[in-house]
Image (cartoon, rainbow, N blue to C red; front, side):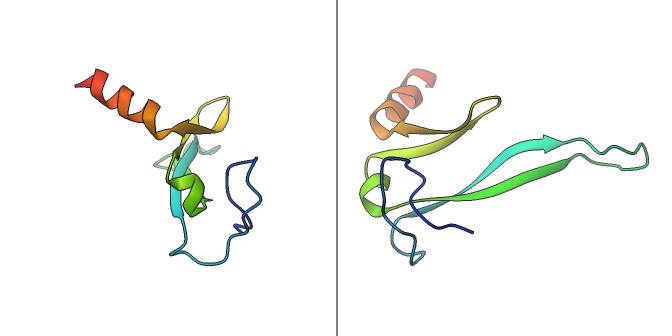
Length: 83
């Protein structure tokens, strides 16, 4: 259950979906313990950034680190260098 902004430094409580930005992130792939299972199971989690934080930040998941906050300016630089 979402209770507050995913930014640890922000105390904004989650109240409505239309206020801020909702993220669905794959936080890891679980491999079945039995050989009879066909596919690995994805582990999807939901995170929310309030309007103020969503205007300047985005979220990413890094294996072994967890959820990280990324400045939108940094995200734009990454996209430009990948082009």
